Image (tube, rainbow, N blue to C red; front, side):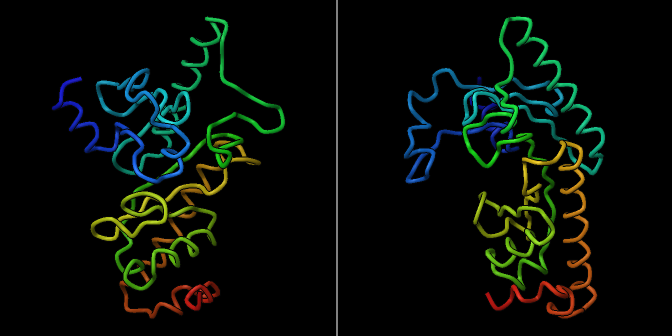
Length: 213
């Protein structure tokens, strides 16, 4: 991979990088022998990726700009099944447990293993709430809010947040995508109230108790 392509992919969030610092993954040895046996398969249109040995053995990603969730999910589903067929033709397959679902490095991903996310701007909410309060507020709608540098970090430029389904287990993939959609719509609705001049307590309604945390 050329330095130019590395910069392009990493700048777009398509390419992972070596775990460093005191983070849990680095402390657990996730960066051993870097970068041997790691890499990505990248579609020419930059809408479909397979990450190999970043954290899990394999991570299948479908992404696009805009809000056509059906198209993104359809591409992901077809990719998952295509990879499954290739693996099974070689006598392998996805690691699956009848009780826990698909097995992952991180226990929080047990179940479907699906994380459906959308990048949205919430500048008014970002100003009114601390990152911890906004994370708690998002949970009330069944979603997780990740800041500009990942989990438990402040918003990115312009109040940008990565909103995704909080659960992985106990629901179907379609249900979890719908949870993400519903959560995004609810957060945007509160943001729009703030834009119209509604005060934060009124906009948050019964969830305003978060302000005292």
